[in-house]
Each structure stands twice: as structure tokens, then as C-alpha cells.
Length: 149
Image (cartoon, rainbow, N blue to C red):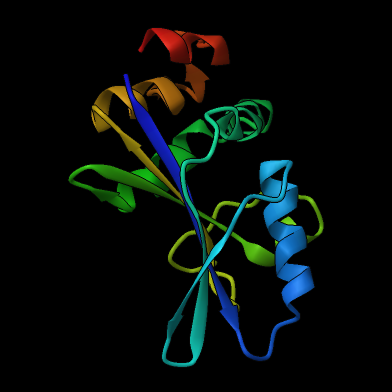
């Protein structure tokens, strides 16, 4: 399965750009090449063609914190025909923590959006955040299985 990863981060004129860059690096582990897109009062920082290993930290975090069901619900909310959007709390990322946002918990400075475009969204979703029973993963997955999707 082919998977394209990109990142979209709003940068408001009142924000310190170096702090936003820390958020990006805390999530990705590296500082990617960024494009700037200006849209009215907001500038968006866009990173494209991210390495697949970017997903590993999220994959492990979701399982270690037993939040498969809530992240699945969150990702299904932002499910489009050919992409999944993972909304992450910008201020939490600044402190090197991962927090997925919901409709009621969005970051006041905008969410960091990790955009996942797999060949098959349903298949990817079932691997990344599979269905559970009583909060437990029915078929435990390993990150290395991504190459067999």
C-alpha cells in the first residue's frame, strides 16, 4: 500500500514561529522542509512527502495510552474520500506531549493536522486504530506490519 503523509500547521501573526517549529519537530522528530502558504490573516506551514516512520510515535502512543477507540472516532470524524486527518493539539506538542483533539478540545491556536493519504483508507484505519472489544485490540498489530498492508 502506498501512503502519502503531509503536515499542515496554522501560524498566526501573534505566534512565535520558533515555538511552532518546536511543535513540528517534537511530532516528527526532525525539522522537515516547509512551504508557506498565506491565507488572509493566517500563514500555513506545509510539509509534504514525510517518511512513513512519522506514524510510529503515534501508533505506539495510541496503544500505550489505551486510546484506540477515541482516536479511531477522531480520525473517522475527519475522514475524507482519499485521506484521513489526525488533528493534534499544538500547545501539547510544544511540551512534547501528544493530544488528539476533538470538536470540543481544539487548540485555540489551531490544530496541527497530520494528513494521511493511503491507497485504501478503510484498510489503513483498521490497521492503525483497529476496532476493539472492551477497550482491547482484537487483533494486536505491530508497526512493522505497515509494509504488508
